Each structure stands twice: as structure tokens, then as C-alpha cells.
Image 1 (cartoon, one colour):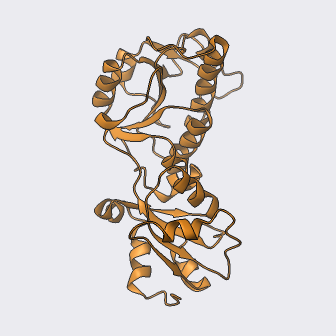
Image 2 (cartoon, helix red, strand yellow):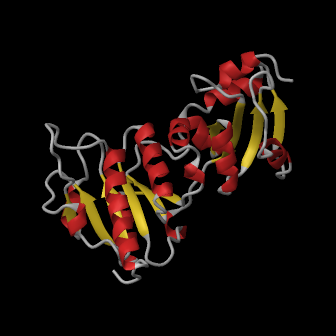
Length: 271
């Protein structure tokens, strides 16, 4: 059992809270039993599992056995003190793993026929990006792309807020110009959300290949997306505020797209 918080392995885990350390190793931290189970289900590649028997509950899904059977992966028991040192959650459940960072190059992303995709441009808060991923997974989105990324897919708070769905939804990252060009080669309609939009989401046909674009919390989408958008939509607001949280806006538009697609039976493959 690993009991010393001064152990080099423990110090290396703590360093993974910094993006530079994650990027150097191309890894991320996944904490929480449910998140780990979902990450494994989605094809996540584990490297190390740390489990605190004093805190961890049963393992009905065989997470420890599945990770120990993975080529090259290790399983280490740790003390409560070590868990408190390496955990980034307020109430850790005793399960934490190092896994390969999710995602692929944009040119390798295959969203399939008639895709519904989500583009997140310059989302600043990891919690928002993770929440958008969780919504995208629930809505059956084909891919989520981070344009002009401010935070990385491996940010532990992205993983946490996504409940591990960052491993189950195909994700990629690139510049806004590259993402737009990639969408055009796939004949996807570009639907941006903006307070200046002239139509509601229900007034835009999203039954064909569609990319919903959500901009940063502070300034929305950049001029490039405004200029190139096939439709600019505004979510009706009936109170005093003029906009919604980015994750809430994504949920509303994606589920409207799903409503339309279910109404016609199947998504169209043409734009």
C-alpha cells in the first residue's frame, strides 16, 4: 500500500493538475467510480489506478479487474492520507486513475452519416465544457469539437463535469478556421447561437448534417462564425437577462434538433 504523501508517484499525480504536465505525458486524471466505469466503457485507455480501501465501496462493475487486465496498466492501493493529497474532489470516493488523454486530430474524426455535431468556441470554464459534453452524450451527438480551445479535454474538471462522457463522445480540437473548413467539406449546416439571432431554434431546419456552434461565455461566437453561419438563432428570453449559460444554451438547441429529427423519423444525409 502507498502511504506516504511524499512519494514521487504521489507528487507526479499532483502535478497532473497542471495542463503542462498533462500535455507532457498526454494523460489526464479520472476520479470517481462512475466516471471511471463510463470512461472504460467508452474505450478510455487506463495507465494507473489508485484505490483507497478505507474509502472505496464495492466494485460491482469490476473496474479494478478490468484495469489490471489492461496491458501495461497498474493497480495500487493507497491510504486515506494519500487519497486526500491526490484527490481534486471535495468528497472523494476512493477511486482515481491516470488515463490517456481523450480526443483525436480533426482530420481523423468520423461523425458518420447525417451527423448532429457541437462546436464549442473558446469556452473558458472547464465545468461548462464538461456539462456540454454530458448533454451532447445524452442527446446522441456525433462529435464535439473545441475551437480555439481555452481549456483542454484532459482538464480534470472537464472530466468530472462530463461524468466521464469525454471518453464516450468523439472529441477533437482545432482553430475555428480549420473547424469551419472541415464542416464545409462534410456539407454540414452551421447554426450559431447569438443574442442577435433573427430566428428561434425551432424555425431552423436541423434535420440534415448540422453543427451547432456555441461561443464563449463572455463574448459569444467570433465574427468568423457570424459571417459564415447558415443560420443565427436566438433562444427566446422572457426575463431580465439576455442570454443563458453556454451549457444551457447548447442543451436547448441540441434537443430542438433532436425533436426535429425524431419528427421526421431519421436524420437526412444531405445538408
